[in-house]
Amino acid sequence: MALIRFLDKPFYRNPWSQLERMRQEMDRLNRNSNNDFATYPSSSAYPAMNITEDANNVYVRAEIPGLPANEPELFVEGDTLTIKGERKPGAVDEKGSYHRREIEYGRFSRAITLPTQINTEKVKAASKNGILTVTLPKAEEVKPKKIAVEIK
Image (cartoon, rainbow, N blue to C red; front, side):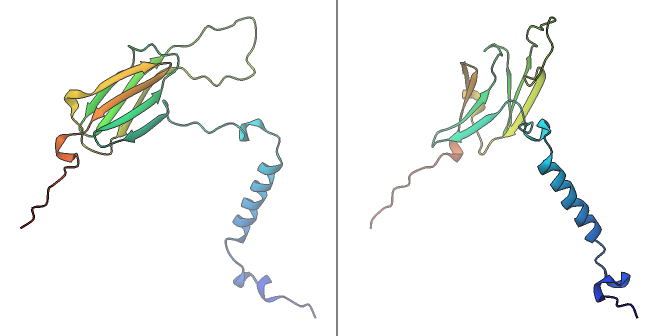
């Protein structure tokens, strides 16, 4: 007489067990592979940005190395800041071949939603050492106001 374990009956098997086994095998293959593509940093939005704020302004700092200071186009529409530009390709060395090519070029556009309303009439932008700094003054209606308490 053959013994059949309870979980070996087809009716009681987990229908997802084969998919889980395949996922575990793929994880094992990825861990053990020597492919360099697994170690490359993931591509992200360009340009990289930091957004900070204080009581009066919102500051956006964007990395745009290799782009002349007068070339990026800035647009403020409502609560959205858009930075557009084009990064030109560098000199191509025809004598050699590339082992790695990570510096991207071409047109880019990045739009971000600002954390508060701003005064679009007083926006300033400056570029130094490949860092574009955009100063966006907050609108008067969103700035904190100190209210004096009257003592009676």
